[in-house]
Structures are given as structure tokens and as C-alpha cells.
Image 1 (spheres, rainbow over the protein chains, first blue to last red):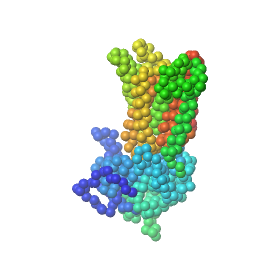
Image 2 (tube, each protein chain N blue to C red):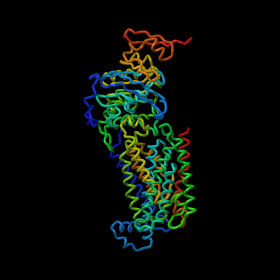
Image 3 (cartoon, helix red, strand yellow):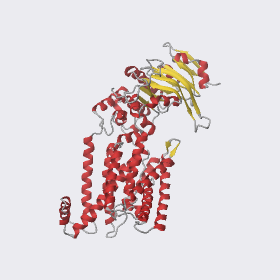
Image 4 (spheres, each protein chain N blue to C red):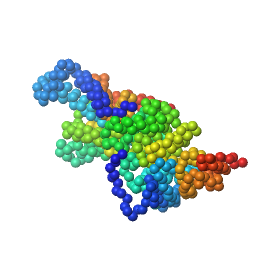
Length: 284
Length: 346
């Protein structure tokens, strides 16, 4: 995709920690406060990690651990209070909206549509960032949208209305719209929240496949311990605004650590493939 | 997959333009004085050829000097209100938004009345007199929509019920102000309270004002049209639209200012005609879908058709007397509003 770069290159005095990294979060922090004089409502303490193309990173933690805040910092919706978030060398929050949408796609918990639209119309919205104002979609846009639907196995949904398909089908179409943006970075906010187990596994299988084929860097926010253990290459474990651990699932999944973070008794065992598996135990 | 093409857009607009033409011809014919279709055609051709002086009959005078300007005014007002309504609905994420229901029309009316009073004080030359009105109306409309937007904003999100309630209350408050201003300070060239409260196309404004309103509305509608595809994405919410590449603050400013201009200019020449901006975009959405690149132009045509019909009814139903056009639109619009509200709540 040839896109004119309108943001300045970062200056030379900002060293890359790892030249291979596509996403680089460097000591980024954030504070929510109603106004500067009052005590902050929530603080996300400085944290760092990097992600390469084709990698799936899970941001894991219980409620109110700062997962969504971190996602907003990565997506550029918020500017870090300190530190930096770079995507291929550009600060994400400083990108103009169109350029940002060409590089970062966000799949959120489903939003209610004001007026119904068909699945294909919805997917074509992903091409908005590539079109000039008043421009009608080109043949190329249509092909990209069609391809995106095919990649998530939703070609048959193309002409259906968005308010008349199941939660799992809708999630696929939303993912297809994100693919139509042809991003470098694919962000998913609790994508499995309203899905049954079969649909959850389907979704993460397609994510792993897409990350490998299209070389996306995928960031997933979730609290599904076992899905993360099975599919993630890297885990960022958060609790109450602190980053406790960054690393492979096998290294992060330690019984005492997870029990303390999630406040639930559990056991961790390793599968043959070297993936951790968590079993929750009752408290009595 | 059938994305919108320019050809399809133009085809639908030309069908609507044809319907508008037929409606205009019928509206020219109907009235307290009957006019034959032949005489009508002959006189219209003469006007187009610039030979208005050749029109001899009194009937011709009625058509060309009274009915035609009134119908053209109805077209501009109807198109403006509908486009303003469609854009408010998208930007506020509220299918019940309409310049009248949100109180923007009443705000424009208050602004226009105050401007007229100021004008009487200033004793300007006749060319400028009247041109202050639309600016006063614009200020009134812009202040009202900002106020209603803030009222409906809670914790960074638009709460659509609060917004609607805020709009309706604002409308009733502003209408009380209008009634007060009209009863205590009336005089000079102020029009009656019913003009500002219900709307009317019966008195033709001065020519300079007509030109200003016509050109200004066209520019404002064009500005809104540049944001048409952004508005499509805004239907899903401001946050999601931002992530799809919409410059939300820019779109918000362009659309609020332009929609306020459309409402204000329409109000300054016709008073507060209600529900057009609600009814017409919904009808067009049912017919052509909710893509704003299609919705905005079709709503403009649809609004023009609707107001021409409503005004024809208003001036013929109790002929030779007439009722206000706002009464006609409210008779149809208010029950439709209730229907939409019930459907949304269920």
C-alpha cells in the first residue's frame, strides 16, 4: 500500500530499543483525573513491551486493571502522559485520523447501529480512510472488501442485514471491516465477550492464521486465561494499573501470580505443546 | 455487493426532480383562482424567455408574480429543513432529531425577531434592512444547538433521550420568549406570532433577502455534502468513526455550522415549519437506504416536494382564506414522531 507519509519522521535522538519491533511501547503511562488539583481516579504506571509483525500479544488482567487504557494508548486515542507508543517509528497519538486508520484497525465490543446496514456496506466502511472526500468506492475497494469477508469465512453473510445475524457472525463481519483497512496493527477489545466457546475458538484460529498470512501485529485485550495461554505469543499481565509481567504464556502463567491477580484458586499445567492450561478451583 | 455509484445517484435524483416538476406545475394551477394548463405553459415559457411584460392576463400575473415565487421559496425552505434534519440525526445519533423538535428553529426565530427589532432602531437603508434577520437567526440557531448538545452530553457520550428532552424543553422555553416578545414589543414591520411559531409562506420576503437565503443555503448544503461519507461512519458513534479515519471534530463543526445556517435561513423567510426535517429523511431512508451520499440529495428533493405540497394544501383547503403551512406539516409530522418514538422504545 503506497501511502504518502504526512507525519514527520521521529528525530534521531529517539533511539529504537529494537529495530525489528513494529509496535514499541516505551515507558508509557497515563493518569485519569477529573482535574489536575484532585487525586487521580486511575493510574496506569509506566510499562514497556514490543511486538513484531505476525505476533499475537494478549493484554490480560481482571476488571479495572488498565487493559482498556493501555489499548487506548496503543490505538492513539489517548496521548501517554509520559513515555511513547510507536508504530513503525511514528507516535500513534500524533497520526492524522486517516493515516492512523490506514495503519491501526480496532475491533470493539459491538456498537449499536442507528440505522441498519448490510454486511457488505459495513465492511466497505473500512475503506473510508483510503478514499478522498465525496469519492465513490472503486472496483479495488470492492475487491478488498470481498476478500476481507472471504478471509474471515463470511462471504455468505455479505447481503445480510447487520441486525439480523448472530453475535458470532457479527463479530466476523466487524473483523472483516478491520481487515479491509489493511492495517499494520490489529487491535481487539474483548472480542470473545459475547461468543460461545465454539465461536471463540473459531475467532482465535482465524486471528492466528491472519497474523501469520498478512503479517499483522495483533493485540487482544481479554480476561480469557485459557484462550490467551493457547494462542498468544506474548502476554502483558496487568493488575490495578501495574504491569506485573511481560513474556511468553509459559513464563507468565505461574500459579501463585495468577491466583493473586485474579483472586481465585487455580492450577496451571503445561500441555505437550508447551502451552499453559489453567483450571479454576472452587474457593471451598 | 452493490456499492453506490454516481450513475445511480443521478438517476434517482432526476426521478425526484421530475416528480418535483410535476408537483410544481400542479401547485401553480391550483388556488383560489383557476388557471388553465395551456395558459400556464404559455406564461412560463414567456418568463423563461425573459418576456414577462408580454403576459397580459390577470391570471398570468397571479401565477408568475404570486404563486411561482412562493413555490420557489417552498422548494428552498423544504430542501434546507430536510438536509438540516438528516445531518442532525446523524451527528446527534438520534433518529428523532429535527431542527424544530430540537428547538433550533425556535432559537432562530428568537434571533430573527431580535434582529428585526434592532433593525427598526438602527433605521438602515432599505437594501440592508432585512439582511440582518438571517444573521440574527443564525446566531439564535447556533447558540441553541450548542446548548442542546451540551444538555444531551453526559460523561463524554450523547445520551439520546436526555438530548431529545432537552430539545423539546428548549423549544417550549423559546416559544414562550417569542410569545412574550410578540405581545409586548410588537409593532413596526414585525410579523405575527403565528408566523414565527407555526411558519408560513404567505408573505414574500424582499428580493435581496431571497438571494442571500438561496445562495447561502446552497453553499451550506454543499458543505454538508462534503462530509456525507463521514456521516455514514458517525452513525456507529464518534469513537468508532475516529478509528475508521473520520476527523470527528472537523465534521462536527462543519455540520453544526452549516445545518444551523440552513435552519436559520429557512426560519428567517418562513418562520418555524416543523417536522419536515424529521419526516422527509426517514421516508428517503426507507426508499433509498441510509447512505448519506444518497440520503442528503434525495432528502433535499423530497423536502422540496413535501413543502410545496403542504403549502398548496395550506392555501387551498380553506380558500380564499388560508391556514399556516406549519399546521399542515405538524398534523402529519407529530403523529409520525410519536410512532417513531414508540417503535424505538419497544
